[in-house]
Structures are given as structure tokens and as C-alpha cells.
Image 1 (tube, helix red, strand yellow):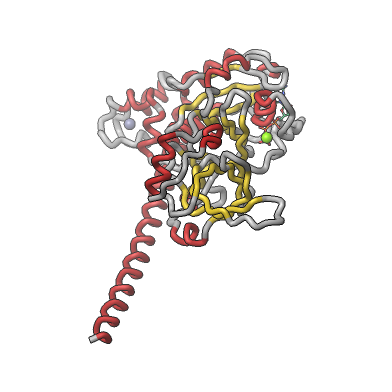
Image 2 (cartoon, rainbow, N blue to C red):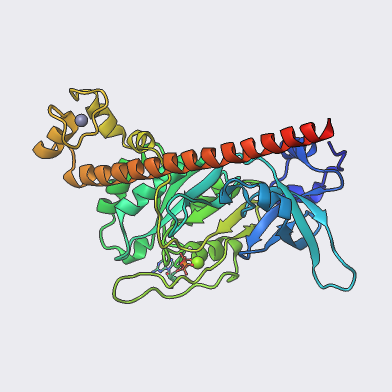
Length: 369
Ligand SMILES: Nc1nc2c(ncn2[C@@H]2O[C@H](COP(=O)(O)OP(=O)(O)OP(=O)(O)O)[C@@H](O)[C@H]2O)c(=O)[nH]1
Ligand SMILES: [Mg+2]
Ligand SMILES: [Zn+2]
């Protein structure tokens, strides 16, 4: 327990009495609260409410982490030890502890089979940004929506570059179907069309994150909200509208209205980190159809008397939506199996360590006698 003073300045970075209580009940003596505002891969920038420090992660925190996802990420509130030395341009801190997150957007780490990666933490609203140029992909929006739902944050889809799209009714309709009760807005960040819908999400102290593929216009949006060109942006490729991975680090900005906005690099891979059940939950229309399947645990692939497959065959269910559902579900099943294998391996290792410790303990005892 620490009797830390309430850091008033940190409120402008989203801190609150509730966070202070979490901090006070968990933080080590002599540490103080801060928020991670930039991930430099390997080290961080944190804001203490009074200023920014460069921070590293305490060895003990790294050592005790079971998963990479327990390590600090942009948006996290942390307990920090100040190790600044006189004469250095920047203050230095060591992150002792990550406070329990209220929401967290995760994905399966690119290239890793079973490691999850935190994209942003403690966010109120996830903006899924999708360009309506030739990079438009409703299937990608769907993947983002699934991850956003699991994050605990509210998801909002921003269909950007409306100025590049002659007929917006088709994409808006398509995305609205999969969105359920998540709002969809049609905007154009560069010519600043439709941006008047955004302030409703940007109250003081609220945290929002912009996610989406490279070139979708996330940094352009951040600049529009900041009212200045703080983030670099770059033309997309002529041929296929793909972005050039201009933003390379996750970073949080304070907007003039007091909201905190996180810009993220476009993701090359967006693999799911969900169970098959979570996937099904995201496809409400398919769930409804599934009630008429012959088997309760029907996977809607090859079982007889499957209402979902029948609907896809006779056109009542969009065939493309059915095939996307099947693909995501089998991906999720595979990940679920890998996750189980990993858990079994971890448990075995823990048991081994446990029995070693027991032996050592017994040894000490026999010696002591
Ligand atoms: N026509 C048009 N172009 C836009 C719009 N929004 C963004 N762009 C352009 O799209 C290109 C890519 O925008 P960025 O903001 O760099 O994209 P990003 O999502 O930040 O991309 P990464 O940082 O690579 O992930 C830039 O040339 C922008 O000027 C828009 O509404 N209309
Ligand atoms: Mg960018
Ligand atoms: Zn079925």
C-alpha cells in the first residue's frame, strides 16, 4: 500500500479516482502513477502528469510475465520508479507494475503461433478505419469488429475516403449488416467531410484508438483532430491503394477537447485470437439460423440437416458471408487447439518446477535436521 498523492496533472491523460484506487492498492512503495503514451519497441515514453519520461520495464516484471501481453503497452497506467539522473536531457523511469486494464485490444502476434499482442489498453472507443478506395475489404472490417468486441471497448466503423468512392451505398450497406449495434460513419479525412460526428466520442479524459490497414487514413484523421500536421502521412500505392506503413510506432496524443487519441501502425496481419464460440457470437444471423440445425454442436460444415449450410445453398444467407464465417471459425478452432497445447506445456513445466522446489525444500529440511 502506498499513500501516494493524487496526481492532478495526470487527469488530463485519463487518470481518475478509480485509477488512483487501483494504483494505491497495488503499487510498490515509492512508486508513482504514469501513463504509457508511446511504444518505442524496447522502451517507452510515459507521462506522469507533469512531464514525459523515458521508461524501461523492470527486470522482475519481465521475468514474472507469463505472456507478452502482461508487459506495458500504450494506454496502460503503470507504477513508475523515477531513476532520473542530473544532467540528462530526459528523465528516466522504470515501470514496476502494469495496473489491471479496463479494456484491451489484442491480436495474435504476427508470425507467432500462440502469442497474443496488446495493441492498445484502456481504450473507451475503437475506431476501425477503412478506406473506400481499392483497398476496401468488408471481410477485414469484420475481423476488426470481432477483435474490437472482445476488447471490451465500444467499436465504431469509419468508412473513410468517401470522396474516392462513386457509389457509397453498397459498402455502407455491407458494413452496416455486420456491425450490429456498432455505429458506422461515412467520412473523408483529407477533405474533412463528415468529421462532425467525431466529437461525440471525444469527451475529456476519454481514450480512443484508431485501427485499420496501412493507408486507410488513421494519421490523416489524427492530424485533422489535432488541427496540425503532427503525424507523417504518405500517398498510397497507385495500383492497389495499399499503404506504405508510414506510422511505425503506437502513440497517444492529447486532443484540445481533452480526449486521448492513439494512432497505430497499419497491421500487416490481423489474425484472430478468439474461440470458435466468440466467432459465432459475432455472426448473429448465423446464430439464429443455427437454432434449426439438427445437431446442437453443429459446426455448419459437413453435418447433415444443417440449416446454415442450407441457407447458404438456397441463397437465404449470403454465400460469401457463409464462406467467410467458415474460414474464421476454422482459424479460431486451430488457434484454440494451439492454445490448449500451449497451456498443457506450460502446466507441465510449472509442475516440473514445482516438484523441483519441493525436492529442494525436502533436501533443506533433511539437511537441517
Ligand atoms: N482522397 C482521400 N485521401 C485520403 C483521405 N484520408 C487519407 N487520405 C490519404 O491517404 C494516404 C494515407 O493516409 P495515412 O493517414 O498516412 O494512412 P495511415 O492509415 O496512417 O497509414 P499507416 O500509417 O501506414 O498505417 C495519404 O496520402 C492521405 O492523404 C480521404 O478522406 N480522401
Ligand atoms: Mg499512419
Ligand atoms: Zn449447422
